[in-house]
Image (cartoon, rainbow, N blue to C red; front, side, top):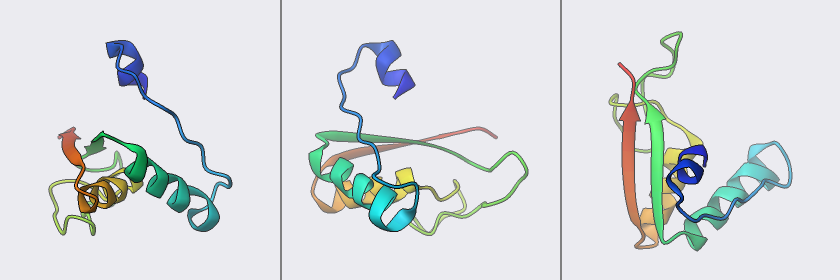
Length: 89
């Protein structure tokens, strides 16, 4: 979101109703997948403390798993254009 603002790219921001997966983030992320024309997911290779070196959504150790990656997969299932960017060492 911060990068989209900086680049002058238009976007809508969706907020979860609750700060929990069910009834909150999951539903918000599904709405993002549905409403997006293009979905860009920016994630990290590893967490700062080295945890979570595996993404169950992509079945890879190339980046950590995240709600963003899960949402990207849901958008992809809907035929949306998606792009994944992995940052960090």
